[in-house]
View 1 (tube, rainbow, N blue to C red):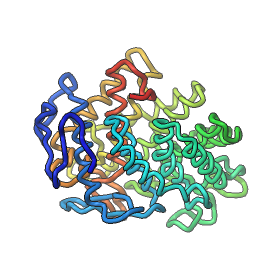
View 2: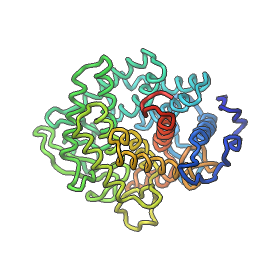
View 3: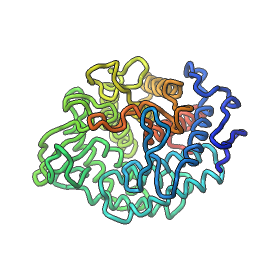
View 4: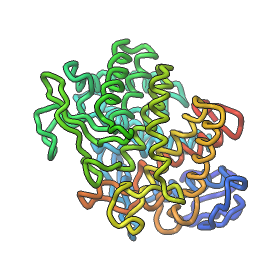
Length: 411
């Protein structure tokens, strides 16, 4: 049984939050009184309940559908498998107990085989860096470091020099004109794996691949107003752009919320790794169009042009991704605009921490109201593990900033 800090415990599925200064389900009124540790304690308690529900080793909690309490569990091969151990690493960073560390190391270890075989798709970056990346950051375990290098090498096998990007789906996917070359916006997040490896003893060419991918995506993936396509299809031989499509959004011409969030986070991390001003400028452009179109509560609808707004599902996962990214981007921008970004990020986390978005007694996830693949009728208004991952990452980052540290420092 995982032991919770400051006297909280999980006995059966009961837990107490009153000792943290809040009652479960009570809205947090403003950033001025926002208790970050209370929210992290809530995450510890929810994760403890989830651990008790996992029926066997080597499977990972992914989704709880609207109105249900049971997790959909997935295998190591699922693209979201790295988010659960990543969540546990952030909770270990906060809690610092051997119980959390041992549990986290177990779930991280299950992902090791992914680094030793050809990747099913670009998501090996999510799978390995959210898990082993956080693990190495917190422990310095050299075996973790080698897994990261091995995974980076596997990811580069999807790179097409004719195009200048990493292939996302090396298989038939509807509307992708296979066997032509497809690249999705999510792929920006996986560049962190390549940057890290190149700077920590891996092949230096990984850095160049990551930069070229970011540049090619910047040139072809965005409309004039800096909203993004979900996918761009290229001719695999000539590298010419064939078309831009929005696979999981409402239409090819609309701004799919999570896709734009990936762009915000992705170009922020590319600036961090390159210090090239063009990426910082671009990160602000893709951020500002997103922020300008948000509803009052700062949590986007699943697509900014979805018919029927406001009576359509929100996407808490996009809000969590953006909040975490903005906390980092704010430090690079600085001055008045940086202060605006940080304030908005904190307001997003406050809203996500309210009774309107936290799962509470509804289920053992952290958050409600995320939307996975609306056009396919999948994970609509659900609890999803990547929403929880970026939510707890955002809380950890905000705690660091409140303590006068940088978002990439250790607690």
